[in-house]
Image 1 (cartoon, rainbow, N blue to C red):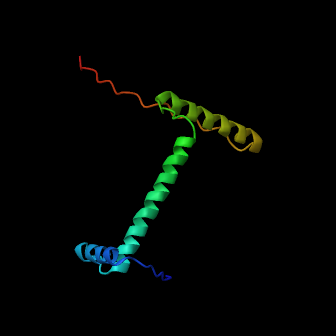
Image 2 (tube, helix red, strand yellow):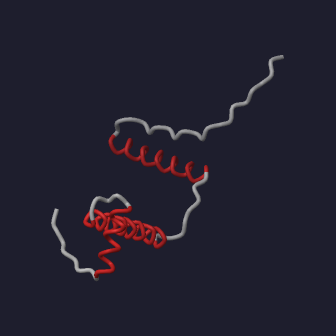
Image 3 (tube, rainbow, N blue to C red):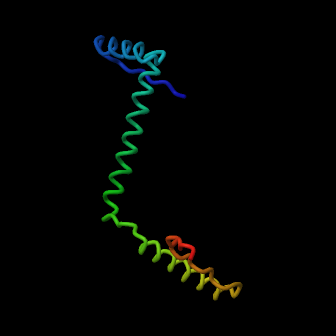
Length: 105
């Protein structure tokens, strides 16, 4: 780990020392590390949020969406099977169906 020296006005230094003592950070250096770590995490989170917002409109994932994904996988598997002549494509799983109970007669 490298070191960094910073200059603070007396009033700010007193604040940092008081915060370090109140928060049981141990010392001013650990308090400052915690501040930088939190700010760094906030900046990374903000960058990820902005990247998500800029990636385009949101798409709702419905059962039909998953059916489409299964169809794409089945199509891809079929192409690979033909290309390698190894095996038949795996079947896409059907969406789970609701169990129906019947009364005994």
